[in-house]
Length: 226
Image (cartoon, rainbow, N blue to C red; front, side, top):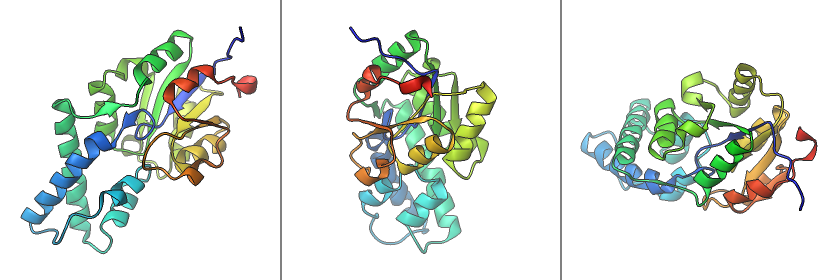
């Protein structure tokens, strides 16, 4: 039987990698626009769901420019506040789910001695509460978010994480081009997650390895413990 060589550490994106984002996001998204209309900050129909889903992985200001271009800064700020509020409320009410096999696979990686981290372009409260309410927070050594560290790119966020925790090598696991870039620029093996329904296949063209189910992480032979 072949022994799979595990990495020193694994750094995970949250949305589209660990967490099935649309199960929480879309109900909150529609509530957000209902409230914006009530407050007189937005007129017209709610933008198509594809706009927000295709923006996942971007920084929040980039997402809103994509979803509601041409709107006022006050409208986009309020949309930010409302979306977070409704998502946090949803988490407290038990809305949202992890991808199949995430909890069990993370537990097994940790049992095998892999140090686990999250690096997300999301807001601090969102990232930490998803991990908390989904029951996976205790498995991670650190939960890093662009919202908390005020980074302008995931490259910088992962660099900070590595420096603060003394991570010399490992995997960057994610579903978007920002994850591929963050991994490559920080000397990590990039594992592209090709199972989220809203990503574009070409975004993962630079990944070293691509998986179609989260549990496949347990069968990756890590070349040279990069």
